[in-house]
Image 1 (cartoon, rainbow, N blue to C red):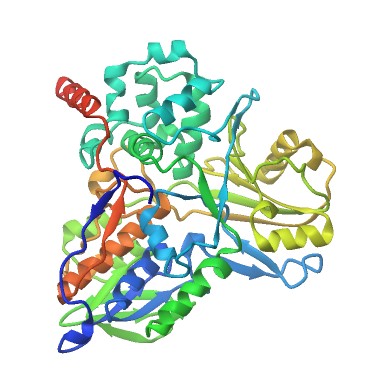
Image 2 (cartoon, rainbow, N blue to C red):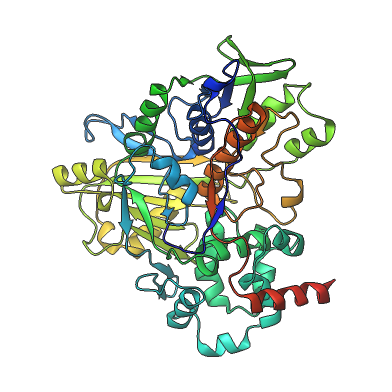
Length: 510
């Protein structure tokens, strides 16, 4: 946390430990992704007894890891996960969680650059940019082959002011009904830069720019560019997620008495004097509080099966949630290496259906060990927001890989796995107003996850972690216990002049 203007959101006050209460509260956390694990950590550290129920057989949710038998050419099984994840330096609350495993964050490895390339071969890079806003964004734009000084002059500065002067949650009232593509077109953002830089970021929300809220785009721009001086590079985990992150965290939590129930789903939650959590294993857990930290589909299924949970308005908000289009991860074990100068991560624009390429042996221990033993390479191809039939997608991804990395064209495929999932939340225009927040309809019920509304400048994994800590704080406050502090980038743009200009623009639009 090097940014001196980061915001400290103070912990709610209360007793330091549940041992000071007449009876220790018991909470069931449903879901063991980042959000659920943050909530369980926050509760257990205050002496609350916790059961974590997770439908999958592993922890971490969409950032989970497991071992899979893929044949004799990968002895001992392959380390598997759902794809590359970037741990940005401004993910303060996620890093707070990971420091429970290792205060020095030794499981993270810095990536000094993540280049972006478009179909014309134009290349953007984040290496060597200044950290101080707005010079970071200006330097990125002016050295980009897709953005020229004349483009800067042609920008509609008044219409673009909200992009540089984000105020939360006001940005959602102003821009959430507009899609990102229309907004960028309205401010005269050059098409080539729009397709390369902004499309890569928008698709990290598993959405085409035409299907992404402009408010989410502006908030993202604030988090990663103009709102933070943490820099634009990120870290990656140096081993499979289960080994590096979640198994050690599980050990930490179990030492505090947390009980994990993996491979178990929750059917329903009944609220009365105490909560009753019914599991598909036939077990029933009684609790003083519940955190629902599932994906959208899981949350909807549980609420639909729990007719006494919440009023009609709250239930309608849950039912009105949507998932983003599917995404595909294609992992390849090749019989020869890629060129040694290939970056760990390459983002692409205009290379549909390919969105990025990762070379795993450059950062992940298990892939590096296999590559050293065999002389091969482990490569991962991502396709986000898959809206077309998946027939032929594998071959199309391989064709794109061969065009970008010609040395792979003659490589033999030793093994491969294709994962297709559709469980990421949607952030379409107009979605924000109806999205449920952390507070549930009962003071001892909370929601958490990256699809849950929280009016702070956070996104993706950091939104999951922040809502998890916030869910723990809500229940801790209910029990009379002290909560945990949160940290974010500033909740509004750093330039007072730009904020005034943005407010004038909003008044004129109205």
